[in-house]
Amino acid sequence: MKITEKQKKMKTMIAAKDDVNLWHDWRWQLKHQIHEIEVLEQLLGVKFDKAQKVAMKKTMKTFPMSITPYYLSLVDADNLKYDPIFMQSCPSPEELIRSNEDLQDPLHEDKDSPVEGITHRYPDRVLFLVSNVCSMYCRHCTRKRKVGDCDYVPSKVQIKKGLNYIRQNPVIRDVLLSGGDPFLLNTDYLDWILKELRAIKHVEIIRIGTRTPVVLPYRIDDELVAMLKKYQPLWINTHFNHPREITHSSEKALAKLADAGFPLGNQSVLLAGINDCPRIIKALNQRLLMNRVRPYYLYQCDLSEGLMHFRTPVGKGIEIIEHLIGHTSGLAVPTYVIDAPGGGGKIPVMPNYLISWSTNKVILRNYEGVITTYKEPDSYKPIFCDRKCDVCKLHLDLNPANEDKSIGICSLLADHDEQISLTPQNNPRLKKRKVKKNDV
Ligand SMILES: *Cc1c(COP(=O)(O)O)cnc(C)c1O
Image 1 (cartoon, rainbow, N blue to C red):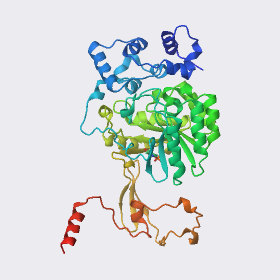
Image 2 (tube, rainbow, N blue to C red; image 1 turned 180 degrees about the horizontal axis):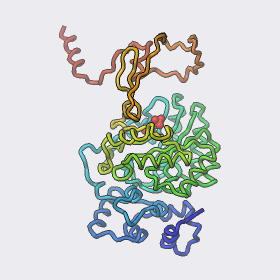
Image 3 (cartoon, rainbow, N blue to C red; image 1 turned 45 degrees about the vertical axis):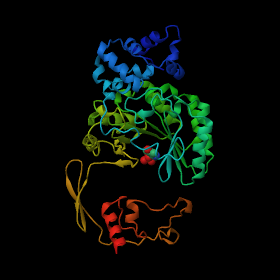
Image 4 (tube, rainbow, N blue to C red; image 1 turned 90 degrees about the vertical axis):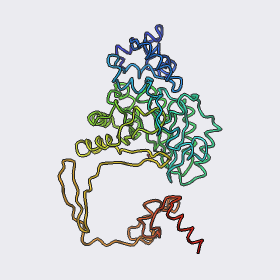
C-alpha cells in the first residue's frame, strides 16, 4: 500500500526504530493516537502562539483530543485555519462558548432508552451503542457529552441486556450498531455480538455505523471483512464530510467492503467552514459514488453542547440540495435531515417542487425553474381500505406479525382509522373544554 512522503516523515518522528509497514497497522495507529498539543505541533511542524495553546488546552479539559497519525497526516499545515481535517479533529476555543439553545442530550437518546445502550425511537428498529471507543474524536460529535468519558467497551453482561431487549421485542427487524465506533471493538468481540444478533429470528438486517474508513482505514482488514461476511445482510454506513478525506487508503478500505458485498452508505454532517458549500458536497458525493458509496443522509448539525460554531442555517442545507437535485446523478443526492431535539427523530427537509394544485391538476417546477403541469387521472377510483389485505384484490401476503398500528399522519390518512386530528398534549383549548363539562 502507498504511503506518502509526509506520512513516512511522521512515522519516523513517532517511532524512529519501528518498521515502515507499521503505518498500515491499525493497532499501531491506535497506540500512537495524538492527545497532546506539543505532539501535534511537532508532527505538523507548526508552533501555536501561547494564547492559542492555552485556549486549546483549556478546551481539551472539557472535550479531549484524540487523532490517529493517519488522519493527522491529511492536514494541510500551511492552511490550518481553514483546513477541514484540522477543524474536524483539533480543539477550538469556540467549543467552550455556551449558547442558550445547547442541550446535553438533544436527541433524547438517553431518555428514549429502555435498557442501557439501546435507543428505541422508531417502531421497527433500534439504535444499539456497542462501543464507547473512537479512534478520532470528531470535534462535531453529537454525543460530545460522552466523548472521552471513559473509553470503555461495554461488558458482555451489558451487551446481553441489549440483546435480550431485542430478543423480547419481535417488532424490531433492523438493528443499527453504533457507538463510539463498533469497528474499534476487537474482531472476536464484534463477531460474538453479530452472532447473537443473527440468532434472533426477527432481526432481518443489521447496520453498522463506523468512521474507520475515514479516520483509520487500515482497520478494514481481511480478517474483519471475512468475519463480517458471515452475517449478511449487513449494511455499512460511514461518515465522510469532505472530498479531502477520500484518499488512496480510504478508497482501498471502501473497495474491500464493497467487494465483500456490503452495501455502503454515507452520512455527512453539514459543518460551517468545512463543507457548507454546494460544490464541496457535490464533489464529495460524486467521489463517494465512484467508490460505491451511496450518500444517505446529510445532517443538520445538532444542538449538542460545544457545536455552536459548526452550525449553519437550515437554508444552507436546502440550498445545497437545490444544487444537487437535477444537476447531478440522483444517487448523489442524500436526504437532508434535522434530528429533532427532544427525540422527535429525523425530519427530512427538502426544497419544494410542488407549487400549487387544483382538483384535476398539479403545478410543479423543476430544477431549471421550468413550471409545468401534471394532469390528474379522470378515472381513478379510490378504494376504501379496511386493511383486510387477505381479501384485497392487490393481494399482499402479509405476515400478521409485521402488521403495525397506523400512527401519526398515516393514521389521519387511513380510511379505516376514525382519528380525525392529532392534538398536542396539554392543549389549553381542550383543557378549557374539560373544565366546562365538569361545570355543567
Ligand atoms: C437514525 C436513527 C435510526 C435509523 O433511522 P433510519 O432513518 O432508518 O436510518 C434509528 N434509531 C435512532 C435512534 C436513530 O437516531
